[in-house]
Image (tube, rainbow, N blue to C red; front, side, top):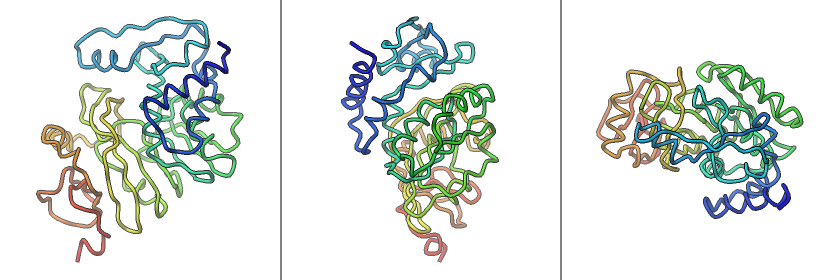
Length: 297
């Protein structure tokens, strides 16, 4: 099989794993050269399932070393830095999360936690030359690699920095690729009407890893609806986490409250039985979405 054949097969593997509905998404996976973003061979490949079990202390993570770029075109993770347990992510999971953003040509998107830029490139292919993607990466080395890897994409800009203090500007879609305890107010503010935000709300399993629920938030005027996308185990977002909310997050996972989210409330109110995660200015709620003005009246 040629490299192009392998990329086409890989896209079909993702198709059967995810069944995405976003036009152009599978074409992007068939077109973007994964090997360009991963550094020189040999590459270390592993399964996302084994990594999750390893993170839970149930088994030891194992990788297979490969030098043929054709081997990269499977639904597997590829190590970026084994000493820090950083990998390129499982394509099927990332495809599901990107698909939930419902990207369209011309959209302006923000990718927080862009790593070395591979999935940023996928998003850039989908929004096309009339759209744009802003990438942000906390790790300065990875951010530098992402800038180099994405230099051929005039519709992409990459910044190095902390997501807690970054203003992405107006966005049609925001993809948060690190575990957080709650949505930042600026993300909700910067969503255009009919905009979509996908973020993982997680509880800490270790100083660097968390597990929880990848959630989609959709804006309609001044109301924000919420729905589950998938379970997730992912790197934690540092300053994007509020340590005082960790007990609430653990309770929300144990009780199943995170599975029942229906809205994000931004009105002032006392915590109630429908509140899953409640903090100043933002509440993840099991109540149906209503406009802030109506909720406070």
